[in-house]
Amino acid sequence: MVLAYKGFEQDLSCTSGGNRFQYALGRWNEEPEANCGRNGFHCAENPLDCLRYYPEWKKSVYYLVAAGGDIDEDEVDSKISCTRLRLIKQLDLEGFVAHSLNYIWNHPFREDNSKVQKEKGEALASDGFVIVRGKTPKAKGQMGDVLGLIKEERGNKRAKRVGIYVVDGKTILPDTWYNIYGKRT
Image (cartoon, rainbow, N blue to C red):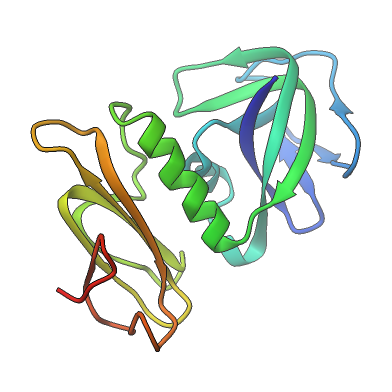
């Protein structure tokens, strides 16, 4: 079994290869075969890779899932296909960013998802979050946005410190740059 992430339509359905599948909570969903290019239940080891398939946060839902049975991988991002999939927990935006930061922390040398910005980044209105990694990362956003920051070790991409902040208008102000420690820059 592998813990992974999956995006869905709001009714917990997905379309793959022209077929629509309705997922059920509280049980294993099962398919006879798993091949990343053709069939099975698709999910991703990196939560950010779900946004490639379900890019609109406000129109989709995202879950931590357990992938089991026959598991197939390909060379396209961190996507996998499996014959058994169980929905474990729905992620809110802050949880989604936290799981994404955890993935980067545990896999510092893998290629960054296109959503990860270098050194300085601003949350886009369409996403509601920003993830920035670097030696002195800083980020800003608008009310309700989530700022995820990863400070790397000197000389390599290994994570040294992680910070996650919500722009709440009190502690973290809108349209203001913050560093890894939640301090204004």
